[in-house]
Length: 304
Image (cartoon, rainbow, N blue to C red; front, side, top):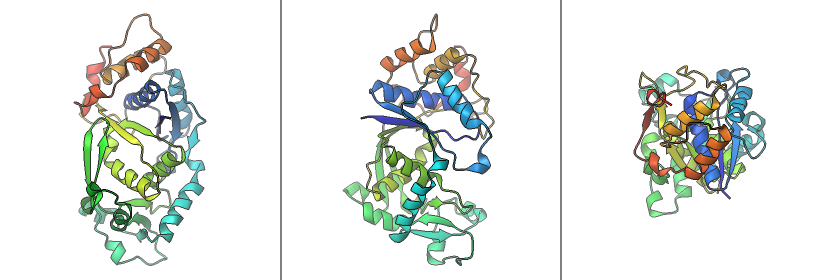
């Protein structure tokens, strides 16, 4: 069975770019007679906003985007993540790293395994990194996966290659004590049986690491499809970090029509309801029309 998901972080209410991603993942799941799940990725307390989770869920329901299983909150799943980290530790695949952000910035965030060869003292607070050289050797299973090169086919972006000798070892547990995004999202996708992930192409660079963790944990990675992101007048993508305005829940039909236009759809615009719009969109949905675009200008959608 197709199982897709939408996984927002509660760092603020949904903005238009988030709604487009939610709608795309919902339509792809329903077009394939699958299930659509919602997961709240609340593992970064310093960035979370009080009441944001409830606001996000209200916005989804207001726009007719109803999930098929109980909501999962990452903050309730620490044992799963710890169990995974323990397995990686026992296998000798992770090591401690206390490199400063200044040093990483100097390396352009392409880590050079400094702490693998010069381990910090056990009393020093440190992050945990995955030794990708060892991991790649363990998980290689085809010609394209030999050495440091890995390749996958994205449903929207086509063939994508990653050279781990350049991108380096990545963090699986943060220095501040919180679980790393890559660990939590991979463990959750495996645990929930996610088969398809449709999301913004700003997350494309995280995908090879997630696939690597799936392979390492003997799980089949989902199929990924990375859609164009929405950019504002300043040519910067709409995001909570960039203070994108919250979706107005009083005009769900207008919001859905604009979001469908962003997804290269041409829905009916008169005498319609959220239910009718979504029924129409499920029938007419296709990822193919998004393959020629990387970004979409928000101002081009305001005529609807």
